[in-house]
Image (cartoon, rainbow, N blue to C red; front, side, top):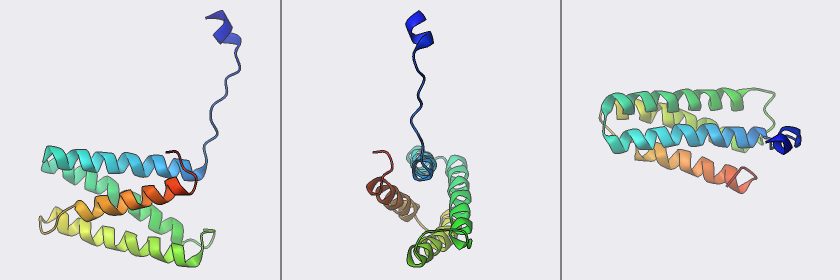
Length: 118
């Protein structure tokens, strides 16, 4: 224990991209778990979290300070619009949540390919 007390404590450096990955992964996991449990209150809560996530992403890419290429920003904004609209259909039990999971998973794959944790 004494050796560990004096050992250097280095935490891995987190990038903005890895933080984004972690948040999206957590929301996606919660949504997937709620869907597997088939508990509508839990599904509704997970859908709300996903909606909050996509609202934040849309707000971020709409800002002038965002440094992503304009085409990528537009695509992310479109996905946010789709996600918000489709979530309303899922909550009304008029659509499946599967497309929402697919979108989040595709975003996670993209972040992983560009340097986020695997």
